[in-house]
Length: 119
Image (cartoon, rainbow, N blue to C red):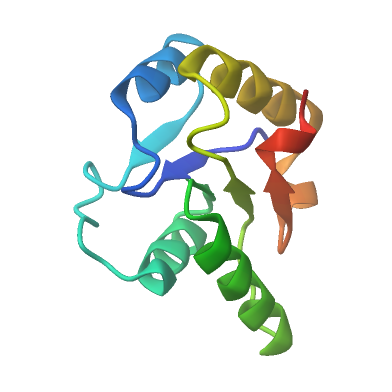
């Protein structure tokens, strides 16, 4: 099964979302899901309930949340951590498409992927 994405409110930059949709990526933003002003844990719970991999620029908080989930024996669908200032929309798009093409939903379960590693 192809990776389905959920962009939290930190990462739902419209240019990237439009570019992903133009390439038929299944994506939902926090705005569309009525998830604005929610906690990081709520975003991850929502993404998991919808079987979507969460994409975020909030690296520190979501990496800690991922670690807490594993420590507590909790399950999530997957997290993609992106550095906001490091890449432009085109480079983010290219790296996300490479990740999506290479990894399945099953291989993302309880995993964190750093977009920086997908060059």
